[in-house]
Length: 252
Image (cartoon, rainbow, N blue to C red; front, side, top):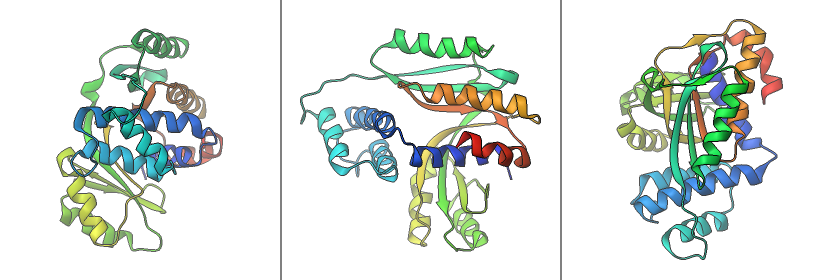
């Protein structure tokens, strides 16, 4: 069981159970607005919008909120926010490589906030994207189903890899262009996804074997994630399963 995959699962659970719903909905709204502006307001014809809407629904965002966000992007509303997508790269504690995906209406503010967190953690901004590759990531709860059956179905549908990080759900990895096809095939077989998204996955990992280092990295990543303008944080750390389980209660 990969500690990195386990942390990805914890992040999804944390997002689903986050008491700060307003902050979460703000991030989801920005993604919907940007996707709709770029590709139109029809989720069936705009796959990025479809993923954004599905993610919003998975996090219990009300349908009215979703509709208002699409309307704001396509001219049906009065708001006119323009969000710019920016990516920051750098090294955090323990030389962990990090990619920060932000969506902002104030580039200077966001850059200063991200740089401050890196500096306070003893890190630095630097190119690290070469240590990652984009993949489709589908998370599917087992709900009593056979994980081997799910894995075989995913592989037959064109999945690149399958991981079982916690026994309660399975993570399916795909080439980016195969994400929707694999998700649809799994759904047709009765395996409904709780999330399906594009992600930057590490090709090499930094293993964190002591509690102090692990806590420092997790705290650093969480501070970045808590920034209003940050949509996603990708990092190449790996924590052994036993240590990840010991830390889980304090990071969820």
